[in-house]
Amino acid sequence: MRTITHVARHPPAAGQENIAAALNEVSIMKEGNLSSQGLEALRTRFQAQSRKAQAYYTVMHGARAIAGNDDEASAWMNQPLPSFDGRTPAQLVGDGREEDVLRYIESLKTGAAG
Image (tube, rainbow, N blue to C red; front, top):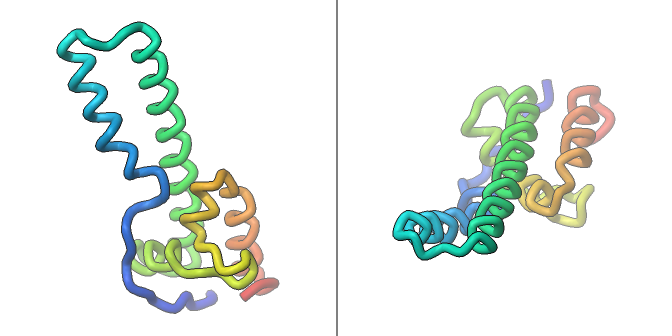
């Protein structure tokens, strides 16, 4: 098993800053002030955030397999990767590149990268 160097924790994954804004929109919806277009926009935003969260946790699962625990996997998610021009796995997932990160994790498991 390849060891991942521990780095300090950073803020949550890309895109999670929109959660507070979305929750604010939900409170507006509860007050009955949201149009059908606004509701559809909110639904679309939630679906996109759900896809990003699922992708992030799929990658975290793979990272945990090589890191050994959640804390190390979380730290790795925010560690710049030279193979990706210094971008972090969290940034790559936020950009929709979770498949690239999963392939990289697989290459670490087989010893092809590192």
